[in-house]
Length: 179
Image (cartoon, rainbow, N blue to C red; front, side):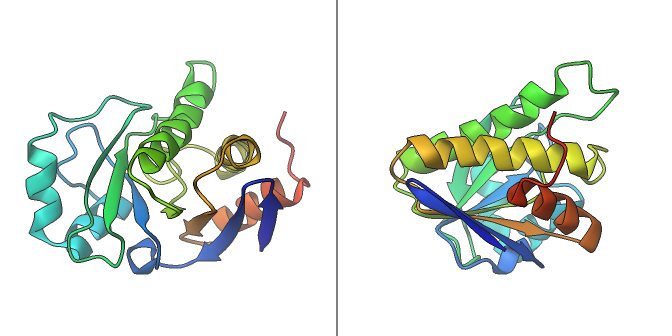
């Protein structure tokens, strides 16, 4: 599925983000940036030791922020590491922190001349963010940026299962409840 905006497009895909043919892959990292499970572990494993070496000098990352490193052995030139919020009950500022992950990742990408990038479903794994809520936040935040700003031409959401894909598909089509 795809949707066009004034200055770019969003494309949904199901699969392995480490195989994305883009300028930058976004890593749903933990605050240490030193590797972990899920997407984080997969990116570190596929990208090789160069990513970990680059992360060691960054001093970690705050929730909602983003930092960039080499893409190591990935097709992508860069990995943008962002730390999503752990979902508690939806009243602890989680939505703003999640939106900030997407905004900051795209800002860092633009600063480095990235034209195409791939996001996972940030915080939807072990951090427990409900996929329907996360999909709305992701699609609306990225869509607003692609509508208003020139630079990034394509954003892929590379999603890991049918449930998450379905939630992002509903959000992208406008059928999801994003209130």
